[in-house]
Each structure stands twice: as structure tokens, then as C-alpha cells.
Image (cartoon, rainbow, N blue to C red; front, side, top):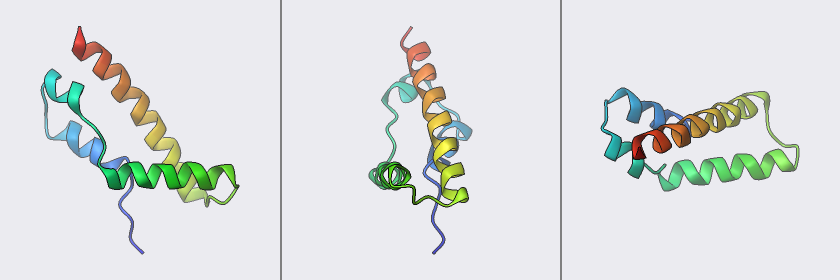
Length: 75
């Protein structure tokens, strides 16, 4: 199964160019949220492959950057 990485839509969002208002209101899709929830749950159970662990780590790093970008966009 060829799964789109949960963080790829954030990268696409940034690459498309945006405005501070769009940054503030950006939310991951339901599919991306479900993917991350699945990865987090499976990580707790010790069931992630190394590729999935890498995907989750990348997503969490990008999520942190988006939180910082949102805070900056507000001010």
C-alpha cells in the first residue's frame, strides 16, 4: 500500500505560498489526523516500523514549526 505521509500536506501548504491568515487557520486533513493518531497509538504499543517512526518524527517536528509559525502570524 502506498500511503501518503501525514506531513506531506503541510509541506505542500508551505510550498504553495501562503499568507499569515492562512497559516493561522491551517488544519491538517482528517486523513492526516487519523494517520498520526494511528501512528501514535501503534508507537505506544511498540508496533511501528523504522519508516513509520521516521514519518511520525517528521510530522511532530513539522507540527512544532507550524505552531511557531501560527504564533508569529498572530502577532
